[in-house]
Image (tube, rainbow, N blue to C red; front, side, top):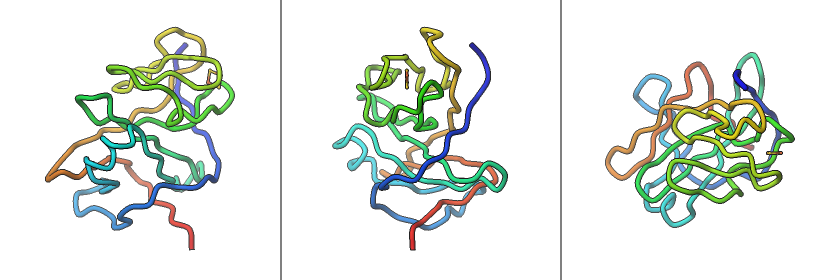
Length: 137
Ligand code: FES
């Protein structure tokens, strides 16, 4: 299937820096060591049109990736799913998502949104155009 999906929800977020990046639309989300040790982390963002949603950040042993954290099928939290080289498996019904593109590789459900990710100076940066990081008061 094609297309993208936004999902919404409010869940406990990973602790980490909250500053907005100096690079346009990029956010410094976590240390590479933290991501490597946990395998996946989740961060809440606010889209001015669609509202709050989560982005999952993943480490597959070689590369950092970021995709929408809620599965388009029935909102399984992808950051709770097993990560294999280049893919994450939804923990609810096992849909397989390409971490680079967000494509649902087994066509079990819709594709999800992938975000451009970079590692600089041992920090993981994610580009989320036009959005703000949502931080609980
Ligand atoms: S919720 Fe992800 S495959 Fe069903």
